[in-house]
Amino acid sequence: MLLKGRKVVGGTAEGELVVSRKPLSFLGGVDPETGVVTDAESDIKGQSIVGKILAFPRGKGSTVGSYVLYALKKNGKGPKAIIVEEAETIVATGAIIAGIPMVQGIDVSRLKSGERVRVDADRGEVEVLNGRPSGGG
Image (cartoon, rainbow, N blue to C red; front, side, top):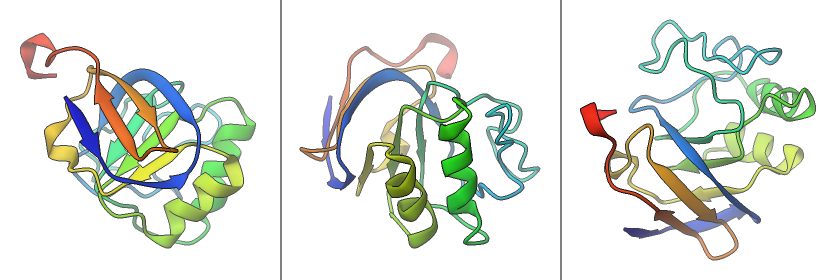
């Protein structure tokens, strides 16, 4: 399956998806030292985003979240790429300063955690490389 969106930050990445159905806050919502989601309201609380492709509808919360995303990358605990439906300022700025490939305009409801994807942010493309994981992911 190939999904078309738009480039926010260029680059390519391939890896396993972690998909949140809810908006994600990086400030207080993701531990910059471990890369584990700590947001009590998140449907992916307790999951690691380290070295994964992170997909979620949009960011929420403080503009300081941009710097948390940068700190994740600097600490080697960030995602390989970010896929969002709506690239609002907080997440877009964080991805830009961290140099994390990012694509917007993707319907994340079509993605499942555990799937393997290839992100070509330069082309605004997300390609699902395998079928849906067993057990509903």
